[in-house]
Length: 185
Image (cartoon, rainbow, N blue to C red; front, side, top):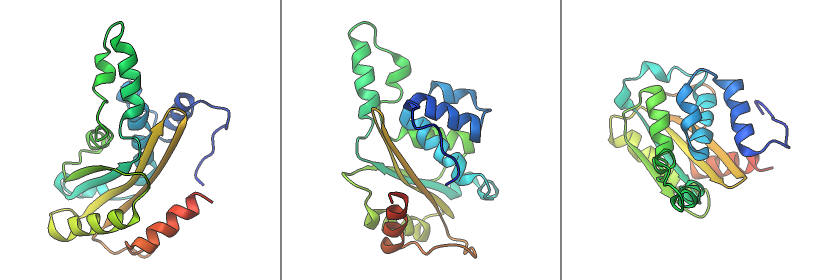
């Protein structure tokens, strides 16, 4: 565990505390919806001690998924339509916007895809990124699960690379399942 916030914090306060702890210098963060903030923060932690910035922008991609798509923000946006529709919220009514925010921050321009499924699909998250790394210019791919619905949230990201590392875990369905189960135990 890298960090644990006070369990009494509501999601917005938790995300702000994470921002203060792991980043602190990205004003656009404050305009993002909760899904984008959570994914963005998870990516900041994941990429903190990597040399991914040495790759060209087209060599880094993303494959993310979740259960609720952008429903949390969609409901918030719908609530504003009664009075005055909020353009600030409308921007975030697609689940792939979290990848856009991460890409803007890090300058990534590689392939990206967002899937919606009931559960974290270890088969998809092991085969699709492996295929991308084998068949496209990608050398690295940020993958995982980023879910926000009301006060329930979860982020599990991992970095897959073509470059072999000493402490690397092979990208297999069994390895992902084991990692995901460890996170939930």
